[in-house]
Amino acid sequence: MAETIQFTLNGTPQALVIEPADRIIDVLREHLNLTGTKRGCDDGTCGACTIVLDGEAKRACLLPASKLAGATVLTIEGLSTGAEIHPIQKALIEAGAVQCGYCIPGIVLELYALFTKNVNATDDEIKTALSRHFCRCTGYEAIWEGALLAQKYLKDKPQS
Image (tube, rainbow, N blue to C red; front, side, top):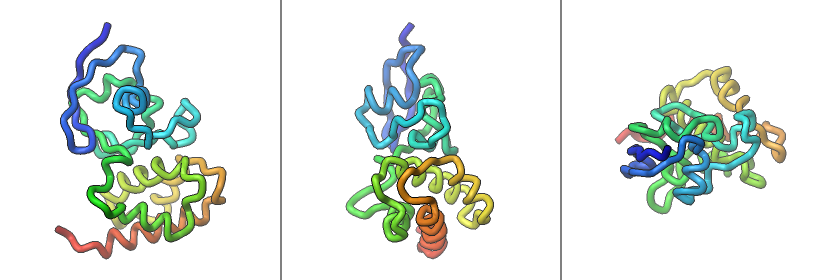
């Protein structure tokens, strides 16, 4: 039976009717037309569907939409405001980590969740976060370099 849930998406309150079989990826892509959250493997292994749910990187293809109730969600569409891209996006582009781009929204949000919690994350913590994502284009070295550059940009960013 359908239910109405309320949650915050990219800073905006939402009220949405969902079905019990809906997953978060279905709600984002099909109900809200936010296609930056990519549908890849549909079993949580590729990381393309990563979102930030209550501060944690989560796989939208694995979670029932009911998990959205009362939650705060960030998708790639909500990461930047205005004309400037987020420093993580900038760093990945500058490092040559963006080729086809399919994996990038998930990687960006994984790094965002990690660095928001701890901008001083260790190399091992960054590698663990990146290990949750598949990329068929770059060979991963550019993604690694981009992650380190993103960390530098975020450390150097003036606090507001």
